[in-house]
Image (cartoon, rainbow, N blue to C red; front, side, top):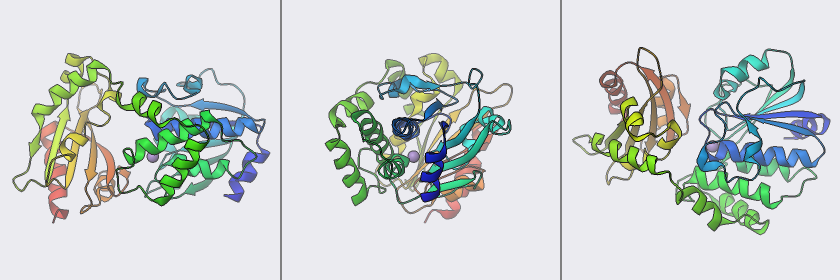
Length: 324
Ligand SMILES: [Mn+2]
């Protein structure tokens, strides 16, 4: 922490990025950290490979996030990758940018269980419900006012990653920080409405296509749904619209592990993004890691090439081995 505070103090230009296909924690953490650092008189560039998904554009200052580094000029003293298990999670354009020599120190701030130690410094705390909570602890140690805009951004990271204080990563600190943020002006009702009562119709159309793909194992412990390219075309939905679909199989009584398969926009061969959710008996981070992915004990993901039947078989077999 002290090293990172020192780096922020010495820096003049800072770049902040987060993982591809960003969620509320990724974007909220980027913006909160940057808005705080800007208060100390530094210049901040916000970059995410996929930009800000429509559902998160209510976040204060989200319009400042750029999705290309083409027009970004000059050098940076300090680069942050937030909510990332490695710098590779920010995408290949960012990895290439790191090799240009235009970046000084690279820092990862993250709360995932796994990390590939790809930066110069790492501020990691798997106990934090969201990366935003780590950002908050950094900002509190800087001469920075937690403005309403910062508070809204960090509050959103918490709501996103704890499922509105419902998941097992919700701890006393989560509520303490949330309470302080509300005191600083964060607006829980406005944020909840923006996040949960603002779905594009195309997403509901996609869900209606995904629901019939529901598959539950004989013992009821394993459930899955999938979304393929055809469903995206039919509904007009985008990749970002699949956020939360894994909660459909997860919501079933008795299900221990829920899996969501999403077909990626590939060329000739199929590529599937696989998301896991565990109710506690299975460490899905380990399963995801065995396929080259990663994540948390109860929420993880990976990507697999092949046709759906093949991919499902490999995933289910490895889950079967660890399911009680
Ligand atoms: Mn997160």
